Amino acid sequence: MEYRENMLSYKDYCTLRESVGWHLFSEEQMRTALEHCLYTITAVENGQTVGMGRLAGDGMYFLIMDIVVHPAFQKQGIGTNIINMLLKYVEDKTPAGGRSSVQLIAEKGKEPFYEKLGFKLLPHDFCGAGMRKVIRKLPG
Image (tube, rainbow, N blue to C red; front, side):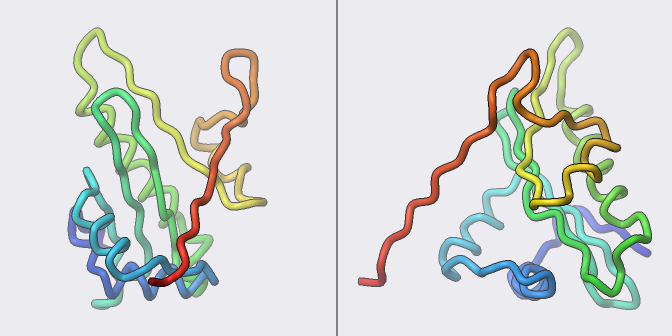
């Protein structure tokens, strides 16, 4: 398995999302999102991209997104390696004396995977529940 930094293509992004049954956004949104990532990781096996992860952030707060491993390649440690590489990027960018907050939204049922990697369920004693809002816009 080869892991590549900042090589996530639009085609691979769409293919991997579809492989796990995730809906696609508009092409414009997806291309813009890929252009604005701080850091991406792809896992490649025999020339095929089989896993991905994206990171966005402002230097203090970071968001891990789109952790996807093609179903045929799951349970092989690929997702763990991708998360660890994304976290290493944040660690490297965190200055001495600083701290960084890394968040993600787990797919339902995948919370134990992230807990094993040090993420904590919300709410807990320090933080309230994570929240989200989806805004939909009908085609012109």
